[in-house]
Length: 219
Image (cartoon, rainbow, N blue to C red; front, side):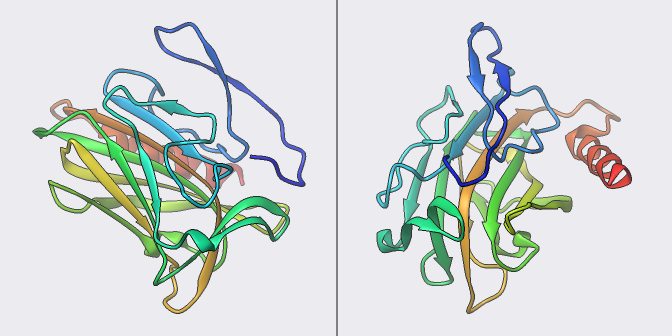
């Protein structure tokens, strides 16, 4: 993603591959698990590929189970430049953004956690405009969203979602949190992890809550 704001770059090591990849411009809060570890996927969209959508184009793609995809309902809502940022989607209730994420499944005995980061301009919190679905039903949000107001007026929203069961494919639909309004979306980062919870363990949701609490305390 290229924007009018100067941003730093970091590197992440791909597990078992020994290769380095640049971090994303708004990858502000990585997932509370080891990215690129067993049972995980990671993908991002910066939308520079244009109005057709398609596979991840944000510089982050680790998905051994298939090719993720973005399907926009209205290609005309892709904007080359809007509100100080490049490659932006205007999203309203009639024209959502739909993402599909192939995954490690189906496994009804496991849990699927999804860590979602969205950079957008519009009413907060975005979580009311997030709809996850799969063969195991919808996902439920775990804890509250972590909302960061960025210097250019945009908002970064990070949230944890959970499926009871590990589906072979999950779907994400982004719409405005307030009906009848339009939001502008500049980046989407999706991390997933399929795992069997340890008996008596806190699970990743509790770990995420600890991370969020620590961040709020530091803020």
